[in-house]
Length: 424
Ligand SMILES: [Zn+2]
Ligand SMILES: [Zn+2]
Ligand SMILES: [Zn+2]
Image (tube, rainbow, N blue to C red; front, side, top):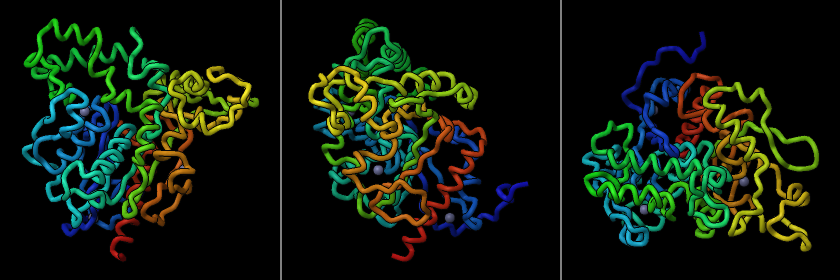
């Protein structure tokens, strides 16, 4: 029997900073799904058990709205999306009220570690950016976040949103009859009935007045025809476009804060196709890997040979490579397929590899692509897991070896940070 299964004596003197977990798009962060990871997280903790909290944020909310929801779910009180933001995007300034925050003592003296899966990672980066901007008032400080840990996060966008419905030439418009358009109709319908539905269907959409308490049936049908949520600049799908990512990078969002530790885990399950192109594909052996692989397998294949050159505005990463002068933009040429590196096509079924590393390009951010247990603040540390899909590590616990290894490593990493902290 592995030593992971030893019973531990729990110390009441635990000095570890708590870990807050943030879900991805359409995800649910709760212990029932995330499972029995804590024994691996605390494996090297010599008896103490780190407090773990699951934050509740809107599963379809934009990054800005999710970051606000995350902040107030921790400190308590009424979610304030900001006067300027809510006026610009046509929704209520205030959202739900948290009578009791998850961690009201959150402060410089009581900092936290944050872990986000997929869009949850981008949400955490947005939260720290808004804290730096003073969005939550003068007291909230980016140093309250001791570390940011991400798994498969689409920091720099993903071609998957275009494949699922976002228009390549006119985002945030969504193609009719696409998966994205269908999904938006489902979300509008569920939100309409949300006051009488179980908590599992809670999309945190009260600031958008989508329920039957606020709108009539004709108004619902109108929104299902042309969604004011899904086809807006303040929605999760738009936040995953390359256009939105480029805007965030231009605003220096995601640039590491000098006293926070950063670690990203990038996953992929594709392989480079033979030949001169940098396209990626998946082999049939990947189809059998658990969990949720069949839809991800299909997406991974298409993402592996996606034509980036049709996207308007042209993504910054295409501007960076040298496309020969005589090649007209908009044509997928052999040259372009060779000059764009393979990490743009390598993917985990939802997000390309390059996007998961960190916000911004390697040349414009402080990063290290090495596995280490000696962290320095202010640097994005990147580790890569191959043969791993978007859903292999989290959220659904299946007690796989890679899941156990991820949590064991994360526990060691957080302890290494706290050890450094004691020596400051
Ligand atoms: Zn502890
Ligand atoms: Zn908003
Ligand atoms: Zn890098």
